[in-house]
Length: 174
Image (cartoon, rainbow, N blue to C red; front, top):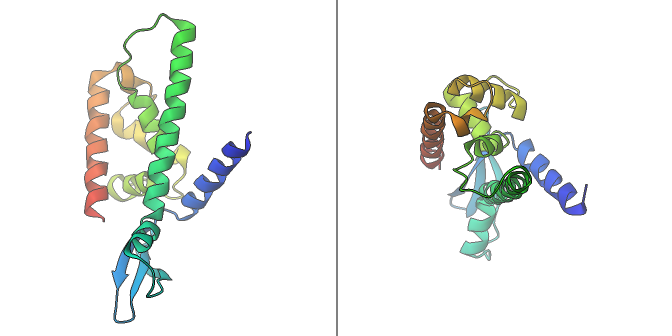
């Protein structure tokens, strides 16, 4: 594994160790701070900011887990796109490839926030592992493999609906 691959794995492990905790910017009479709502529902203070911290620094720090998830998602989609493109070129002539819902669903299964969503809204039991969320997702979507999301229009629609629910849940929990 390359040094970059090792660093990505380290970042994923650090993010996963947050166990789906959500960070929020808060303030009191002393100043600004970040608090986290853990997967168990506890609220804990994560960090306090010096009065000289700029609003940009504070916002960047408070959104660090989300930023990391977003960037890892971009990396995952880029890797999946490259792999999919290499596989398609090797096996058949170039043609228009519809959206790869299977790859998207696979990437979501690795996101701590998605795991927490499936736990809270769809009864996924702990521990919230990639494999457990993948099994639950297949059950929720009524498919035996995520690959069906690319070939079964009804399964794809169920995935889009579940994904929309996840997006709404993320927005509501901010």
